[in-house]
Image 1 (cartoon, one colour):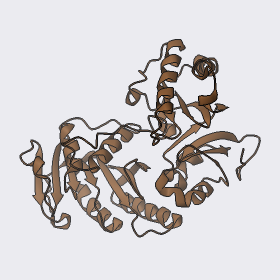
Image 2 (cartoon, rainbow, N blue to C red; image 1 turned 45 degrees about the vertical axis):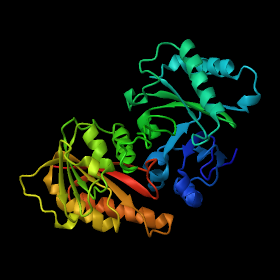
Image 3 (cartoon, rainbow, N blue to C red; image 1 turned 90 degrees about the horizontal axis):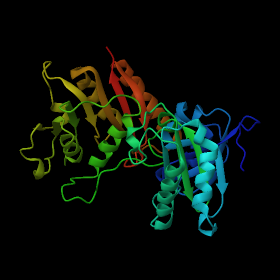
Image 4 (cartoon, helix red, strand yellow; image 1 turned 60 degrees about the vertical axis):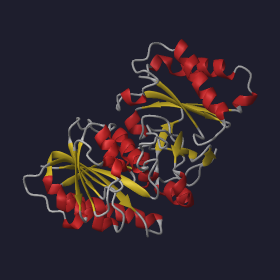
Length: 361
């Protein structure tokens, strides 16, 4: 097992996932978490040793980590070559974790992007067998989003490298499911763009940190064209005021709850009486100029109004520059009375981060 720079008798094995888009700066990310080395497992998973796990959530480098899990049980093996793997694994999970009463049991893949269906079937069969023998679990295993973000879940990941499991709350793990998330279809005829999946995932992730906005909430969306995010918000029963100098997809014409301003964002001047429950920005271009427009319009937010802001890092050439840009954005937001709730890298993000703010009173 590789040792970390903080290795000691108190260091514990941990599994973290670094998105593939950051593969070139993996060493810098690990160093930012005070880790010198790791063992790569599956796709983007790194097995590490860490004495203080809070650094995986609170350090600057933590925003590059998609997910993390304490490894309290590991079985290094090739499941395809093991007789009776499912029964042995299920009984072991019950023996090690059953009396700790997890809220549910969720099993994922070390390589979720693989086209090899063997491990998808293996994960499904293992979950089914474990649920047969575990005590009654309060949260259905087929509804990961129903978890209490603050209660411990038994997470398990499997792949050709073996099985790795541990218990932790979804909030501490930075996700409702081991390395995965809730997606929307990208192949449906009514899907306008991949941006719809990005806001769906953002709303899903935000449930780790605060209650979701109720239906009929009013969103102000900056840079809405062609309308992927707009469409997803409307499907969820929200109202949307969308701003863009480019047109929206014709399929959105006449949609109930949509008010479109065919205008440059910088030219949009809402009256003081116009109020929004949330402000959404996925604007391209200079990230601080985009943030300037968000801050200018944030005065039209209601009490505890939400901001979902994509921090683009185009032109940023290093790990250090990305961290500096993030701190600059958070500092500017704080001066405009916007408090950071959380930040993350979503599955549909490229080299960018999604920041969540709340308007302070």
